[in-house]
Length: 92
Image (cartoon, rainbow, N blue to C red):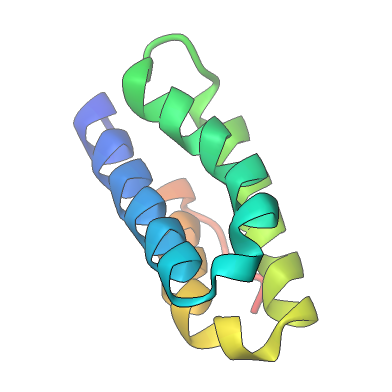
């Protein structure tokens, strides 16, 4: 895929994470730790290892889905989109 597809996917991830922090403000600190990596990748897609950023983000989303049952409906579509972009099987 190209940088535009990567940026669109990161933008979608960033939007989901923002919606999560608006709906559940107490998750802000935990979500922000991952969101700052996604936002950096959005600003500088040519500087980051795109596959690494997406794999780490997907791993974090899978962990959060397991820890917080209410977040699965928000995170599973993103996990599937990342897996489709990377061309591998979704872990969930």
